[in-house]
Image 1: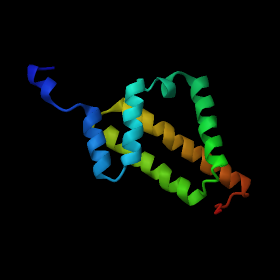
Image 2 (image 1 turned 45 degrees about the vertical axis):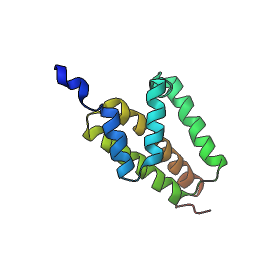
Image 3 (image 1 turned 135 degrees about the vertical axis):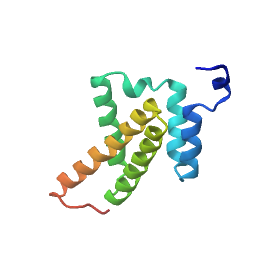
Image 4 (image 1 turned 180 degrees about the vertical axis):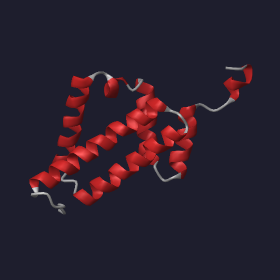
Amino acid sequence: MGIFDIFKPSKLSICLKEMKKEDLAPQALLLKSGARSGYTVYTAGEIESEHWMKNEVEMLKKQNVNILAAMTSGGRFTKAKEICEKHNFLEGAKFMDNYSQVYISYIKQLQDDAGGGPVFF
């Protein structure tokens, strides 16, 4: 790291700016919030991560999020993850991937509950 590197924007700020430009403001706000907490809740360990994911899926169920909305949201988190990967911001990519996995799990449960087909509420 050279002396002028301190004047460069951080990987986080670069990713946040690009996410906002790509109409991913909710994901950017979530990433910024995760950065303040050090991403600890989401990477604490396997058991904690499984518990967190189950809770997130349960919240989506309680809100009756339909499969189309879940697919859209999951795609937005995937896009946010790709932005983080593009800028080599691996903590951010992992953070966004956690949310992508929540939506994948939720969609799978919806399809299983409907006998394998899409569910529209």
